[in-house]
Length: 126
Image 1 (cartoon, rainbow, N blue to C red):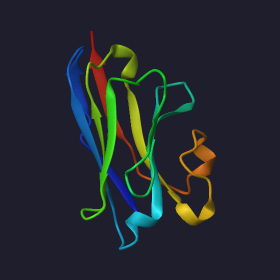
Image 2 (image 1 turned 30 degrees about the vertical axis):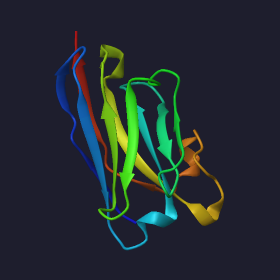
Image 3 (image 1 turned 180 degrees about the vertical axis):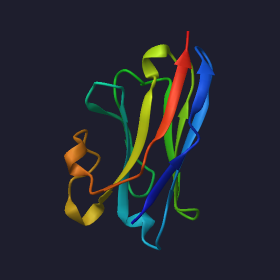
């Protein structure tokens, strides 16, 4: 599966952005999906994940209550709605896919995801 993330940009603190990740292929619903982010000079960190059906989600503590992950399997797209943005949310955001049959689930480790998008940059100004 090929992934393409978009929707990043420059926003003031307290503002909102919605990221989208479009997947190619006809088997999107056979993947659990995740969002990660990486700030300059830092490791890639888990942000949120959603299972293949959209019925289960998981969030990093740092974004819980502010970010919402969702998916539309008919459109082969996963979303990340980001509200109440803070300067520390500034990073390049990546979407990733993990095949359900692999059994990794919605893990927080980047190594559990097999496919990655190119990332989209989010900059939050204070």
